[in-house]
Length: 443
Ligand code: HEM
View 1 (cartoon, helix red, strand yellow):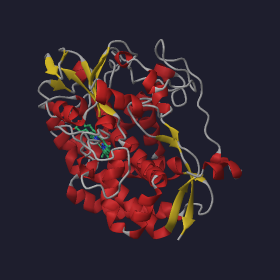
View 2 (tube, protein in one colour):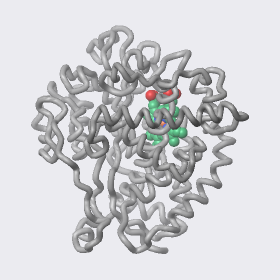
View 3 (tube, rainbow, N blue to C red):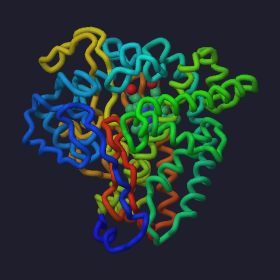
View 4 (tube, rainbow, N blue to C red):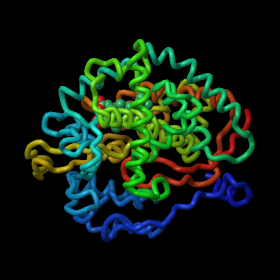
């Protein structure tokens, strides 16, 4: 990482965006910039890993490693999201993710993120439903990301990627996150929804707001502003839903929802829930894998050299990036009955966090888990897409976008150099980047 380069060049793109101060969300949580205590100094019984500042500073690895080794089924009795269990080993996460009869995803029990949903603003979405409703609705949107559609999208994704890469200021610093990762994923989302292309950044905004109610840099007006912006999203999509419902069915996500037998009579809040699911699902995750790939190759230069020597490694490198990055750090489940695990009893009604980010670094499963190895033989066995019946519906699309991005990068640039340590997202759910300055060197 060329942090010294960043200091020696004066350029607006190298100015790290400020993070505003905020009240800690819970007694004992850190203020912005306050040092995270070393993991070795913490009493394991008191570990609470959802303080957003731990994530913004990237100081969770050692805490997760301690949990895996010393208390793999860990209970936190008091946190800003209430009491919750942390599951940190690969095999235990798989066991829970595949046990949907005893571990619910349903919003009626609290959904897939920790904490209780707002009582007066429930947004049912199919990721947060149990059987049979989940599968009925999932089947409705699946055609939009089926293999025949991916074939259709491929040339469009490629030409848009080429256009964007060709427009980059070669040899000059710029922010990779906003210029490339956000822009490419937003373009893809606009295509999937057949959303007015010139207004595509609406989608980015709603995605950012949806997961950042507590983050004053994104949602300074807190809950009120959050609700208002969600309502704007709802009104916009209600209009599109009605319009598409009155037309012949097409393959975009709104048309599929408007015509689907199990979705055409959705309540407005259910429509909002599913739209937000698809926006967040398709946006933050792929965006942070795009940034993560450039960052990882810079952190592991010998892997970058490997890739330059053999472009056929791109598909496996993409899987390894998604493992190494783990763009969604966890998914929550709620126990529907008492369950014994590792000598502990998870009680009916308890919240359970499956820390994919930890399972993807579990030394019991992975060889050299913290290293980024682009020809890792079992890279595809990562759990970043989840595992059970809710396994990511857009996984092939995400892989395709990343593969095309890297094929086109290799055609154009000898190297993409990261100029400074990136800024990280604040919060334990979406694990990613808000800023990363780079220079693209021509071939
Ligand atoms: C579900 C991760 C890309 C749409 C999920 C889940 C995870 C995930 C962890 C939940 C699994 C569970 O609860 O067991 C990712 C990652 C991506 C990505 C890491 C990129 C690297 C996408 C894209 C789309 C998408 C591009 C949109 C087309 C969805 C949807 C679900 C989902 C709709 C809900 C599936 C269900 O409940 O059956 N994803 N995702 N995701 N994802 Fe993705």
